[in-house]
Image 1 (tube, one colour):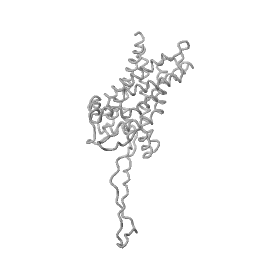
Image 2: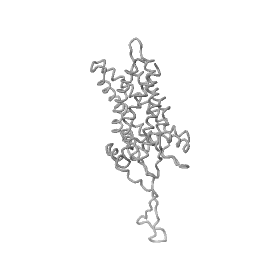
Image 3: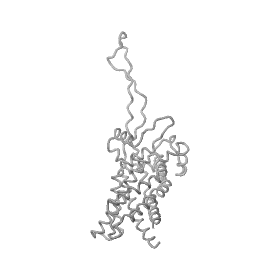
Image 4: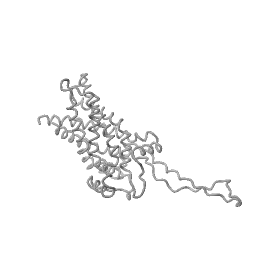
Length: 324
């Protein structure tokens, strides 16, 4: 019974991940909008009415730090998508899709399978009741373990999706997820595959707990209240609501995770961010608190369809595998 939950969840997750990959790519590009550029050389100013003693009309030069260039104008998800197609071609919308497949295979298969095991274990056999707090706890545990397993694929996916926004000379040009993981291991060390893993784990715990727990809870309420019967309408309604909850809960962590994973660490140079908290503080200082909700529209635009496809597919796969 345990293995079946992993297989069912894995199949549904891969289908959902691949079908919504372009929306995920747009979300990543939007989350990276406005990242601070490196400062330019200091500006030299000659102030008026400041004279050196004994040398009339000879002013000191004052060096002040140059201000950062103004951030590029923020654009919406449709404009981001159109720009990607114009500059990189339609195929660019599926940049990093091999990493998505690997990520869903490792991360989502693990979290869905573990959640299913814990759900069966913690459901009261007499009343068939699975309390909400137990649902949330199961989601937190399953999501955390799944994220730790799938982090290398997550880092590769973020980098492959973000590559097209960099100047040609700075692009990493990974050929596939395997090439990305190999190059990262060689040039940055094995530890780089788990860069941002604490963020990935935290995000996955929030997403899994909010997504799976709210889906089960909303579905139960719909059926108990007799609003709809157990069918496609119930599955779509519950899954879209679950996707919205997951997007609201996870977006801030997702923005920070994307930026930490995508940062370039040059040899003998300090990294742009010294961890998640530093990234959050720098982003808020430079761009305001709403920086943590950058890409929210594409997040919900992706999280909604992803969750709908995930659970609708999962319910159908469960029906097919019911006899096994």
